[in-house]
Amino acid sequence: MRLNLTSLFLTGLLLGLSYNFTARAVDLPDYDFHTISNTTYYGGIHGITKDRTGRIWFSGHEAVCVYDGNSFVRMEKEIMKMSPYDSWNFGEVKTAGNDCRLFVGSNHGMMALDYDSMSFECLFPGNIGPFDVNGKGEVWMIRDGRVEMFNANECSSGTFLPSFSQLPSFVSSVFCTENDVYVSVGNVLMKYDPDNCRFDPFIVVGGG
Image (cartoon, rainbow, N blue to C red; front, side, top):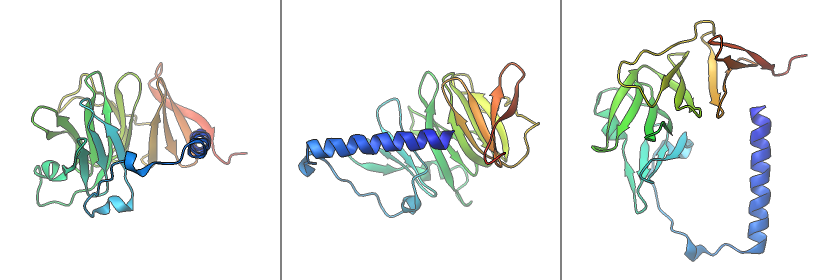
């Protein structure tokens, strides 16, 4: 289902862009071009989001970068201060909650930005995989192979995280809509049932 929706969105986007380019040629002087220093961003950007001040954040395998409208600033060293002699990898970057809190997933934990000091704290240690945010400000993440959730409006370091023990340890992704939460386990897409606090099978991909 997600793949189909994504395909439809991309198809519509491409058609819209084709129409726009046909109606009006791209005027290059209207655009500013910036160069990011050579990093493993070129292996793919894992996440991109806008924080509450309007800055654009990018995350790559070994780098976290913020664009303030004039230049790109590398921020991964600010995070790596917590454990400077260890190897770091970064996943997604997203905002959540009423205050538009900014979170960065890493192999050392879920990092949260302090807007005043532009520094990070580790809210939840561990290996953070994919994570997503629903309309309630809940951040659903895969931490050390388990699905866990915290509320971005209330969380602080050490906040208890409910985990869902009925799920196997090979959950590969998590996806949120405004009201619903889904995880993928093998070829099964499972949907969260808030009334019973559990995930139930929703779609079997390739099933008969």
